Image (cartoon, rainbow, N blue to C red):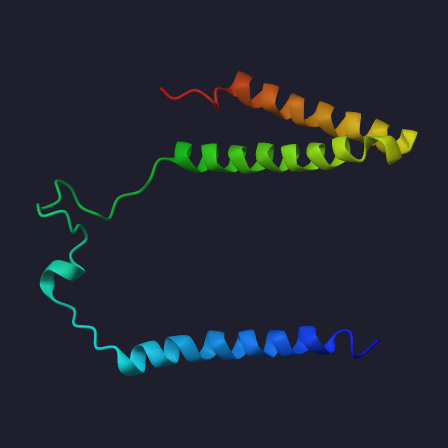
Length: 118
């Protein structure tokens, strides 16, 4: 049984060595000069209109979190749908409860206006 994991262990050690050596060799052999145009916040050729230090609106974070939640829901539903013929009645019931809770959360966000962009 130990020989089965030997290749995986050697592979992990090799990856660890690469992860440590590549940044070391990059800083050792490559000369990088920071000149004024390179360290400006925008490299598009004109001065920024406002300060680059400004907060993002909370709506961006809300939309990102909602996307993650509902994207994970689809990942769970796809695995359940693929294995539907092998599931017991309890698993199917729990799938319906999970789907109901996600739809309820989506409806709650819709009523609260979290999906609207004013």
